[in-house]
Image (cartoon, rainbow, N blue to C red):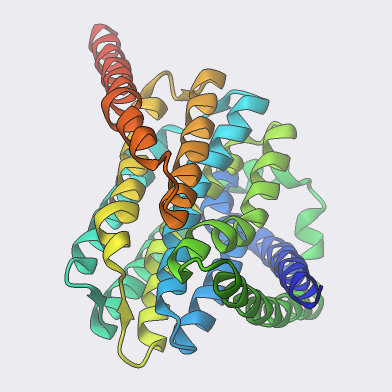
Length: 360
């Protein structure tokens, strides 16, 4: 019972802290006149990724580097397959052209960079510093681009959040208190969640990598789930998709970068992550391109495909962790039928879309 209360309390504190942080940061951002898409890529994405940051940094500081890396990799896979899949099932998602041509390729490049850095089994503090410097440069670029939009950005923001949003920006002390309160809850929640996750791993005989890839990754991604689904239901689909892409970039560059800097000897990366989970994360990022290209939208059937693949991924992790007899048969079905069929479908979608664009 104590373990369940610790885990539940950690999740509640993380979600409440993230909500306070996003609320305060969003109101302050109104003063800057940032467009809705950039709000999704920065304020909302970075705010909802704060739980991943808190958990991974806390884990790295405590020497639990498997949990720190597994949380980031698992969260990125969860964000694309589960959150985008579920959001598209609710309503087909319209994707901004900027995401397809700029942010998604950047996400793919960041995923590939992490895979390359992890090959030696360690992301050093120097490499972590490079990752963190990249997210700073990316954020400065986004804010600079948004500021150059001028009046158009301000008009878009007011359509998204209402004309009164700017007037609330004057209460800087209140918004600062919300941000500080959110950070405090995030630190407390991350500490409780890490404790509960480690104890759960020991009780079930599972490795910290598996716990980080599944339970902790899904738990810390709940703010992204809530934000994207709420945005989808309100028709703000730029924010729904931008939140996922921005969160993934933040996880890869800021969370892994800062965690590497915090850890005394950098982040050790488990062989299973290098050989399977990080390549899956990269493949999921690459799979976004042809789907996003198909009319700049994610159809319901594509959302169902993403969601079903997350179920298969989670099932594989659990079967592998428990050494279940069904694992060999399950692996053969995925490798010989499901994965090739999906790859062919994605290639056909991409070829058709490129051909259609040439005819225009």
